[in-house]
Image 1 (cartoon, rainbow, N blue to C red):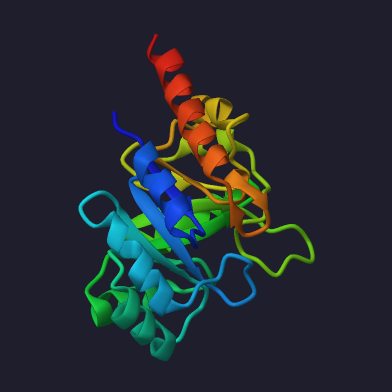
Image 2: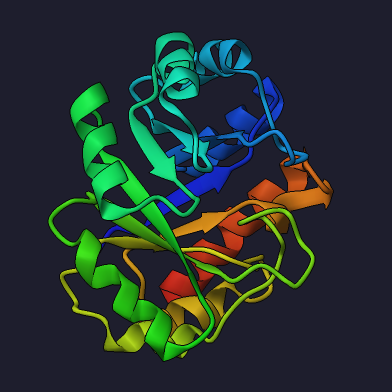
Length: 219
């Protein structure tokens, strides 16, 4: 079964090239001003051109209003919108109608009960992303480099389409794939040399680790 891989928080042509060469299914751009990975929509629009025909470009927003989303969609022309805030099912539905784009809803997880929040979004969100709950005091809903108990995802419906996120890196991706067996994974801080600074060598190392882990499972 193919595994979707999303490299998120990209800001430079070099790191986008590394993600695409590694086989990324998605490249993500962050539009949350407090994040060290923030990019302007116009720059993201230029950077995403390299992915056309190779990977889908994702616009990641946090409780963005229509005016900001209008600008992002106009200037970046994303393939998919990722809502990483406290957006309600009604808001997700409204965004889908307004822009005619698929929407991925991010939900934070720390215990089994958190997965009950999936139900109201079923049939509305096109895909889910499960991230760890932010550490106390963090202003970032994602990209904090922390993980959650991946075994919690074993109870999900096998047909649920989602990405596993939160604290992934080359050292633990094998364990994550073994425990959760997700249809997709998302990584950001795990391929950075400093907050918001993607590292080409770490990106390459992550893809090699994924390949080795999957080969080991197949064997």
